[in-house]
Structure formats: structure tokens, C-alpha cells
Length: 120
Image (cartoon, rainbow, N blue to C red):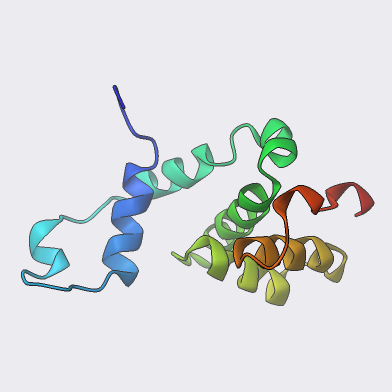
């Protein structure tokens, strides 16, 4: 990769929120804090081209949308899978079939290409 990584702030924020140290030193001594605005900008970039991405990568797009909404609404810093689980608890029930399909594909229980966002 050459240039900048728009996901870097998200990766570092999630690392600090949920990372587990295998060998010393502690995460907080290696990586400094990430400003909330940098994290927000990073996760928004994941959904910047949502109209195209939903067709090309439906599983990731649906779960990213849930994750971004969880941060926007509840300031939660969570993984894609946790975002989908949050979506099942917080989003209107009309979206639950789509989120369930995305979670099943993420877990390898369903082919991503059969996610039916057009029936919602």
C-alpha cells in the first residue's frame, strides 16, 4: 500500500478498546490515544460509497452500517460482528432479516452473494 490508510484510526481505536496483549508491553504504552473525530472519520469512510458497496460487498457493508450507527447513537466502539448484533437489538425489525443474513455470511454459514437486500 502506498499513501494513507483511512482505516488506521479505526484499527487503532478498536485495538485500544478490545485488544488483548499476548506479550508485553501493554497496548496503551505502545499506542497513544486516537481522537474521537479521527475514529468517526475513519468509520464513516467505510460507508462512503455505500450505494456501490452494498452490491459488491453486502455482508461488510451491512455490518459496517450497523457499527457506524452504533457509534453515532451510543458511542460504541465495536467490531463488525458486534455491530450486527447491536443492529438486531436496536434497529427496527424490518432490517433484522438483512442483518441476520450478513451475520450468517460473516460466520461462514451463508454465501455472501445470496444476501437479499432488495427484499427489505
